[in-house]
Length: 133
Image (cartoon, rainbow, N blue to C red; front, side):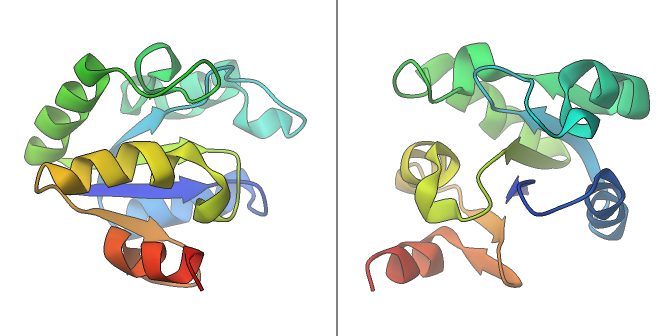
């Protein structure tokens, strides 16, 4: 299963609680640049906190320099088939982030749904409807 989240209005403790509750085995950081103002979500801190349960994939799945690469989507599909994976970016609202309008939409077109943590849990189709209201 593939999940998606934006940490903008979260703490690291919030993120860890969600990962534990959903038995998420891997956090895939899809930020093109894995650093920001919330230092607890910087790459080095997440690597230290999560160890091999954290991987930075912004080179393949980041949105700053164009669409996610097909190679990155294939990797995500393979990883999501074997364990619960959470893709993470900064933007709190999925409608403002490439994790919905690029990654999740393209996965949905391949028959793989993503569950978005936003005001509960919503499928990509549900999020698309919200974004187009």
